[in-house]
Image 1 (spheres, rainbow, N blue to C red):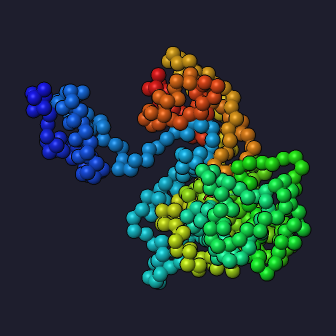
Image 2: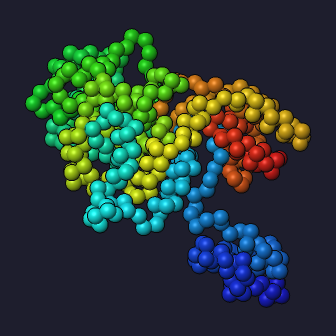
Image 3: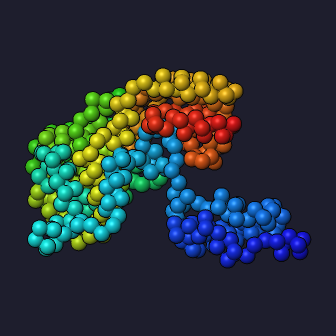
Length: 427
Ligand SMILES: *Cc1c(COP(=O)(O)O)cnc(C)c1O
């Protein structure tokens, strides 16, 4: 026992190893020292050989200084909130790298004077949605709603349909957010039906705006009626449309999903959407619409508390201007059954009971409720799910009827090979 303790190298000696010293540069002193001490303790406890402390330390060091790890999304839910919603495009990742340093986010290099913050990201949004006179970006969709409610209706009324009083997820209720700003809600209609006259009767000098919320995570069917933005515009008050998912233009793959350009063309004065849902960008909240309204929001004191950083602006602009982001590619991809078959065959050849099956993927994350997207998966025995989750990289599968389904819908074709290796390692 004492011999073993004496044989365990001291922290300084482990830190002197070139590989460990390099890790200090990359990860910082504290994190590396903590790892060294943990490994040394394992040696003292007799769990590893003292001679292996350096090698074990190198193996135990984390890949990055952040605890966040890349995860393969094999759930068949394209926008998985617990997995950070939209994965960014390569263009957006590169833009993040550039913006990470000192950057001209609020500087006009020509004149040397202060410039409009995020001007080129706003320019990208306005080019993508020409019917918007102005654009503003805040922290997320909820922040966009809070800013609109505060600036346009605090102490006054927001008129909205009872059937659109939505809970988004994790207990987040839009009505509660709206009233927290000091605005009052004026519900109109019933759970299943609302008419233009219901809205008209609710209007008064107290009205701040009429809010149309896209019920983005449920559908009601049967005896229903709603009033489209195109009719609400005739009420003569500001109409704000929360479209949720952030499609800038219609996408034929999702015919029922609202988009910013159409909502504005139909007469919305302001459109609110998230950046990290179907737009496929970073977390943010988009506000697009009439110049006078957007400027009021931008000048409101609360805007400063909700403003986005240079990283978000950079990733958003690259998403809007750049090549199709992964979310859009996934929605338009074909050949999933062939990929699933090839993967299953290759795994079966290695002795793993794998089978290609047809599945139904969903958009998730508050988008396209009820829309079923034909997809394909590799079915494995249920026990694989946990092993894959604990693997490197972790693969998050879907469990169905005691089987572990690796749904390929949200997986880039380039990632089939890492998934195959992960399954082999989990075997
Ligand atoms: C997702 C969603 C929100 C909230 O947006 P976050 O970006 O998650 O804050 C608001 N309204 C609707 C209709 C949504 O779908």
